[in-house]
Image (cartoon, rainbow, N blue to C red; front, side, top):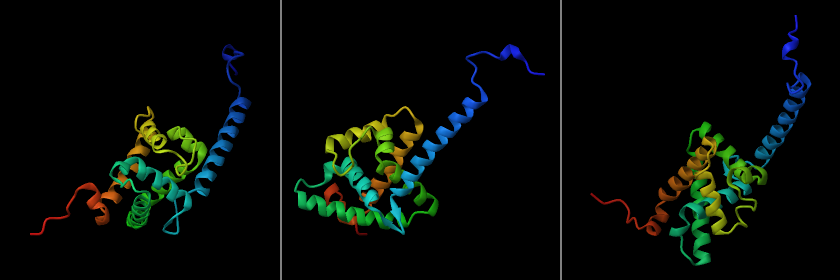
Length: 178
């Protein structure tokens, strides 16, 4: 028997739930395909979108340590991105997939805008815009966005500081000989 006492005009009906589920599924599928299309790595190499994302993140996280001269700065960032590829390929496959997905999220304008508030691409954004985007992720009320921040910060900084070519920029003289 159907209880008509719960039949209220403001109670959503089954068709409303089905339509809503279809719309949410379509939006999720489109964002998922965008993330896959602009993924961070393919066949063990950073894609153009992955390079763009990690270049911006490098400027945001360690930009104060980079030289002011544009040519030197670009050479160091390029060296870092090459070292980052090696670093990412040395990670377990599960972590590579996760970092790849995060780079895909940050490489697409709709998802980048949701996570960071940055509407411009990482390569065209100013240093202040990149800093603000990173702070938006760091201070976001959503735990998943803060976790995304922690992952990209850890990957970027571990790769940068483990590269002996960048030790002189950080003031680290290298390991002490025994």
